Structures are given as C-alpha cells and as structure tokens.
Image (cartoon, rainbow, N blue to C red; front, top):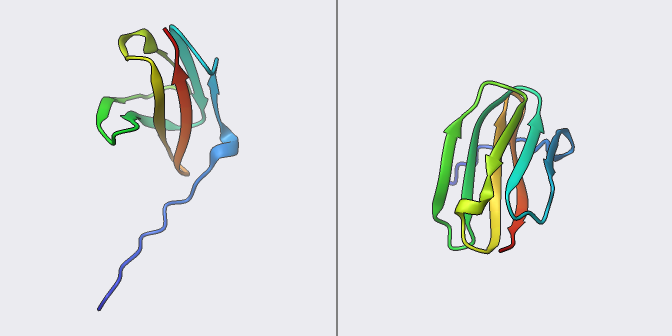
Length: 87
C-alpha cells in the first residue's frame, strides 16, 4: 500500500477574522490572499471566491445560523478559521 501525503503548511497566526461571532459582515485580513472558501459543518462549500487584496469583507448574513469553516489561501499556505453566524 502506497500512501502519499502532501503537506499543506498552516499559517494561522497571520490570518485575522473578525468579528466572531457575527450577524453581518466579517473581515478577513491576511498577506497575499488568493482565495477564500467557506464550508458548512456538513462539508458543503457554500461560498468560494478569488481575492487579490490583503483585506476582504464578506457578508455572512446570507448563511443560516451555525458554525462555518473559512479556508484562507495565501502565498504561504492554507489557514482554516472557524466563524459562528448568529441570526
């Protein structure tokens, strides 16, 4: 059995996500961001966009209340942050 593992470096200290919990907008800040993906706790991708700036404001009021995983892709790797949406 051959097992291949591609290590993806995590760089969570260099990504800011606030406010958390949120009802409306959430601000994501990270140097060299290229993509943001939001995944529900069921594993469904509910939002995915390419970004070219270091600050991105996302409207979270479009999502139902609950917890989401926000994947932030940067030059140095992928960081996953949890965010709670309240109604």
